[in-house]
Length: 91
Image 1 (cartoon, rainbow, N blue to C red):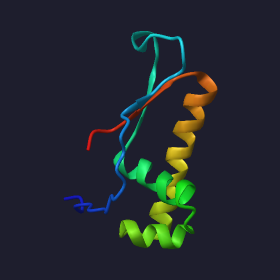
Image 2 (image 1 turned 90 degrees about the horizontal axis):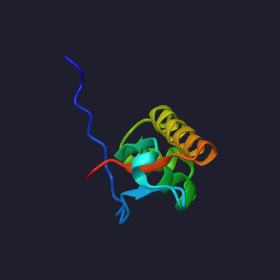
Image 3 (image 1 turned 180 degrees about the vertical axis):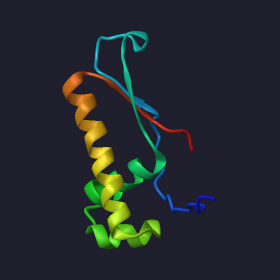
Image 4 (image 1 turned 135 degrees about the horizontal axis):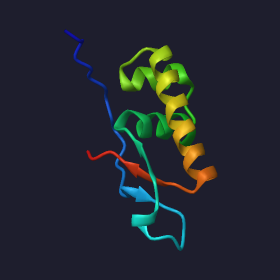
């Protein structure tokens, strides 16, 4: 049986979706960011915390934080380069 994962998410995210201008939603592919990924982006890139400090705030290991952050950055880069919408998972 897999271990139950509990992570601390503190950010208040007011927008659920970001998309390229001038293209209707129905014509866009989406990239979905998980709660963990958006929180990792907030802590590392917006709050400018070191990975160790950010991992402690999320109550996860630094290695796990690094994997989550890398995944989030890859998804965001893909959306920006390929013109996809970015959707944030429901809270």
